[in-house]
Image (cartoon, rainbow over all chains, first blue to last red):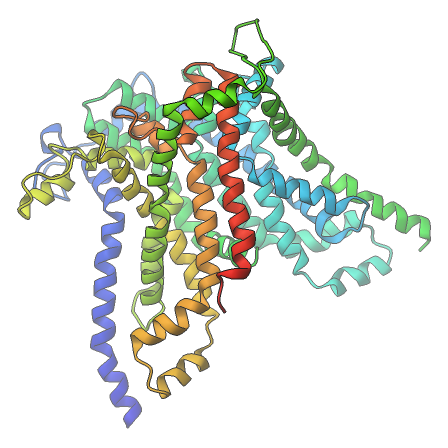
Length: 281
Length: 293
């Protein structure tokens, strides 16, 4: 009886809190809503106040301009996809490979090398931009996609994250395989990788979102417009259409939409990965 | 199973970390050493006359008023970190209560962190539009006749960037706090309630100290991450108006790729490294001293 009474008196409080938090949450995503809404408006409606969230006569015109104009987002998309996907796949695999070495094999100098990884994490990208620029220039890969793809294959964060995960796999699982004569390669490919699927998915998603959103490296290492990735293409669009606010928002939508999709699909993995590496790392 | 085989298996360690090590050498260690060397030269890109100038760049840095301004702007930028941590904590505590739509809410608060790159910075640029933007429109409609100029004035621009940054980081802080709150033992809270502790007391005297390691971690990682960022600022203000949003990391970029002054840019970048090093040292020392379980 008492239990029931307590439960029913809880409901209004719960509902109140939910509504309050929902209102604040909607405030958090207002920039996205405003962006989408504006991209379907006419120039005259952009700054109308009070804001009409659903425009009276929505138009696709700005999205069409972004995708079919003289500098179509199609090229930027293709460039970004190419760089992000190759980088993501390479970084995930190479990180797993290295993480296995660090986590499960006893070899000479392992701890010293791991310390080197640790110390490199502290070096800010700003220290590396100038020498990388000069090295890429020298190697002939400056102003090519290789300048983004090659460094993108390596992520120190990824090695850390997966090492953490591999350490958490109980030794007994691999020990018996080892006694049966399976080498490290077999154990890695047959036992560890299948077990690590969720961790690999987490790293892949996080890495993809970093590569997709990477503006700073693209800014430093690319000049030719046809090589631009989405963030650079977006900036270019905005510099060339300074008063076309609807177009800007259509372009921004084009840049953000894939991330929203990745977020919707991979939210669970992302949250897991970030909390594991923060709380345990 | 021979000893020899065991030995060979151990050597495989080098093969496993080899490829990744190659990348660390090529794209981290060698560039870092190279940059360290550049600090002592007057190298300008495309200029063949390179001289060893000793400590000239470092002396120049200490005399450079822009360096100090960029440090000050960086400090203002960093204010966003504790603010977003505090807000993230509050949101996490509320979401940890009995509440409906928990997952949806968590997702909405977290969305800016994962989806936002430069693209959303351009959205904020319009939202902050001083005369016509919806933010000032709203402020005027509630009776504030002279709303701030946000990104358009030298006194407010850094704070406008702070707002964007608080918005961006909040979801991350919330997610990490939510995980930390899961670890707080429900028995302990129940015991406190039975002893007659009030809600605010429980929050201040039990929960907040218990999550202090998380707070500390979020503070350190947040500060370091923020110090390294310049993309959104470069994208929407280019460090302006005036130099009011030129933070240190952006100042490095400008010296390197606007003035092609590679020697001085390298020097500035090592100053940035030292700031990060100091924060890390605080972490090492503070972890023992300030974190209360």
